[in-house]
Length: 127
Image (cartoon, rainbow, N blue to C red; front, side, top):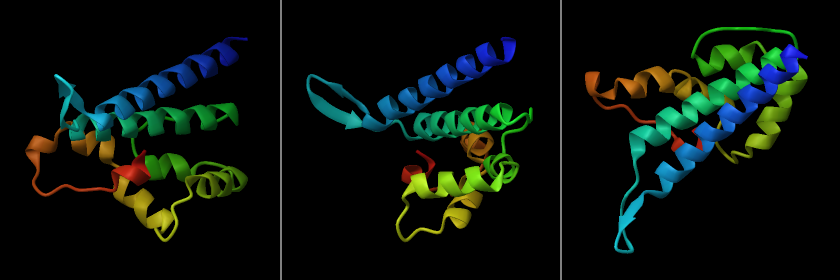
């Protein structure tokens, strides 16, 4: 029973970070005029949501893991789940593995974006 509660709690947290990223992506407005998208919160919140959800999936198959690297977490999934995630991603011409490698460290990198120069990633893929 404790494990089910943890899974439900993790799912709820993942959804909250996804929603937060979505709101930041829409940007904010003053007096009806759209001002800007909050790029760094978008990336950090989407990346953390992806991390929590990958850990949720891993826990549901009996693997409890730590770490922030999305590619490392994805690599621990059973093949059937990897294939399902790739199908659901619907990324068209993009290469899933290449894009995953590019966003793998987004949570850490973008929290400290002021320490680096020239970071970029595909926010749509991350989302």
